[in-house]
Amino acid sequence: MSSILNNPISTELTQLNHVETLIKAGTWIFDLQQNEIYWSDGVFNMLGYKPQSFAVDFEVGTNTIHPD
Image (tube, rainbow, N blue to C red; front, side, top):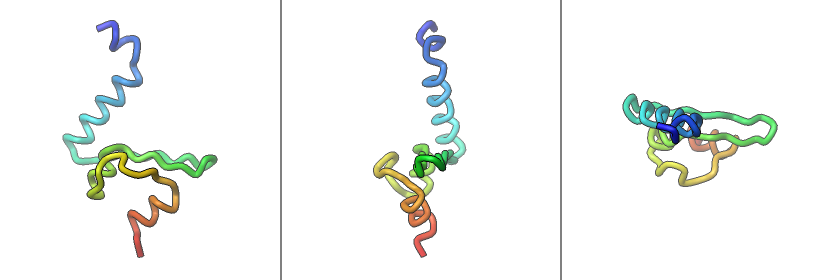
């Protein structure tokens, strides 16, 4: 129990990952200053890719979702 209390962010991310898996959803974060996008494993799965199999920035993310 003490390890859970010592690392609440890790625990929350693990719980979020479980929920995303159960409901077949994903989350993403776009950092405008760094032009970086974070996709959770759920986003990769929804799009048919192995989770975290490539780095995502604005151009890659846009081209992956809307290739035309």
